[in-house]
Length: 169
Image 1 (cartoon, rainbow, N blue to C red):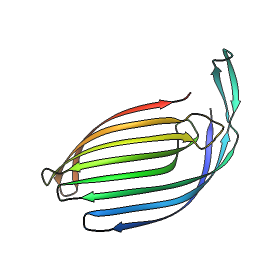
Image 2 (tube, one colour):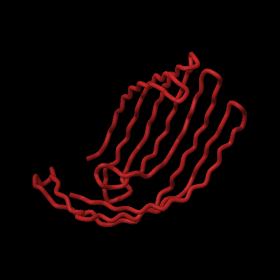
Image 3 (cartoon, helix red, strand yellow):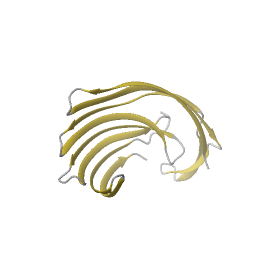
Image 4 (spheres, rainbow, N blue to C red):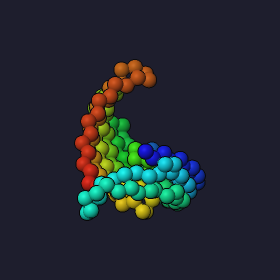
């Protein structure tokens, strides 16, 4: 059982630049400082090389990371395209912090005023901030979303995503 507590201090600066009525750029960049403490940081794992169960301990860590997002938006009355790249830090289900870098491309189309269809693709890589743990993964994702606006502030949306991951264990 691993209990994790982390403090994250981040500083970011950015700009939103509407170059024309159709083109917009969002840029945000910064630095993140993270202190992580692992309570009961011992865990048991099976070592396939020795054929035995072993115990390992995760030590507390301090890490720094560059974070940010750059997005370019192009929009027309009935369609638009959004391309963005990002770097972020987030907690994982395994009790460690992950650094996630990704690129995404979205195309949306509004055939009618209250209907919208989105197509998007994303590729990325994710690693723990603790360099002592080798558990990187690469992923890609394709998605489609259909949305219907049935009232002023209300939407009904259906989405399908297909995701492929490759990772080391």
